Amino acid sequence: MSRGWKAVVVAAAAVGVVSTPVVWLWDGPGAGQMVGACVQAAVGIAALVWALFQPGTGRGEAVVTGAGRAEARGGGRAVSGIRRRVGGGRARVENSGRASAEGAGSSAVSGIEES
Image (cartoon, rainbow, N blue to C red; front, side, top):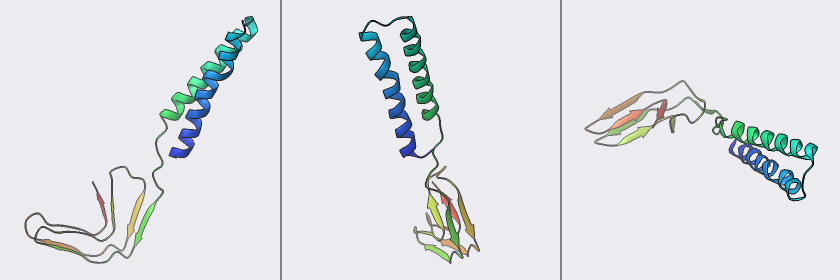
């Protein structure tokens, strides 16, 4: 679920939990209104919990085709492909090129680097 949709569901759940039950309770509810208020609050809380536990979808799939040569020398860093956070969604690299690194602290990635 995207962040936008998650925010919409959380906001709607909060409004559902608070709105009608509060109005009914201020007006001295009858038995049916009390049951309705409890059911509405329970559904709103369930929607809120469901939305909070949905995993994020990230930004979609990242694709690199024909990544070139990555070289790093003397403590440098080179990435010819995709550099992203761990768990950043789907990523695909095709025809990855050659990677080479020289020197202390240098790194070269031709493909996907997760940090």
